[in-house]
Amino acid sequence: DAGITQSPRHKVTETGTPVTLRCHQTENHRYMYWYRQDPGHGLRLIHYSYGVKDTDKGEVSDGYSVSRSKTEDFLLTLESATSSQTSVYFCAISEGGGDQPQHFGDGTRLSIL
Amino acid sequence: KQEVTQIPAALSVPEGENLVLNCSFTDSAIYNLQWFRQDPGKGLTSLLLIQSSQREQTSGRLNASLDKSSGRSTLYIAASQPGDSATYLCAVKGGSYIPTFGRGTSLIVHP
Image 1 (tube, one colour):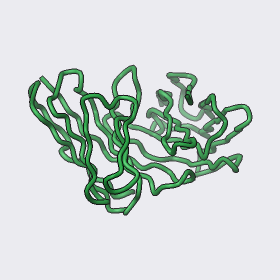
Image 2: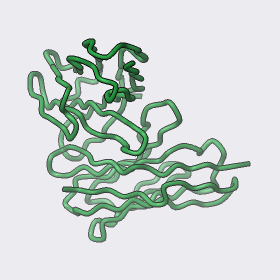
Image 3: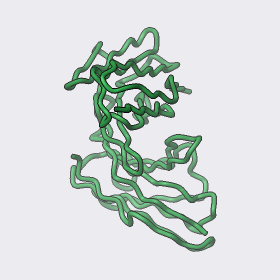
């Protein structure tokens, strides 16, 4: 299995609080991705990174920011959490290049009350 | 914009049946197509990766085919078992290196 660790695995917080999710990889892969998965919507890309300090938006980036200061860590921040951001968040990595597969972490279940 | 459709959305079969899950995509300019399995409450596990130059890939009882020109892939599961029960997703990677996912097929194999 690819070495991907997401933390925390579960979190319950209140509306308006900041939340940071962490994705850590041990594979030295270039690409890292954050997705959210919701019933009826499937997997949706939030942000992705193609190198240290190189990030770009996905289809549902509003309300989220990311940072990647080291190859191995990709952080997802909800500056002021809202109930609509209650979801399961997945991190994925890819070595880079069009022919490389994606590998996923185990997910973070986030509940915002 | 690439669109990926998986049919059927749900499938329930008795143990031992051979199954075909379908994945179709609208833009044939792809690098690869990847099939995943997701168990309830878990992450996605990669099953098979087919490069754009390949026609099929096999792993155990699983066989995935790719027809780029028609925008279709199938995942064939031979001699299904209750342990195969899961949601199966396909993802197509195009020029942006960002995969596009289908909504998945939820499979139940009952004894």
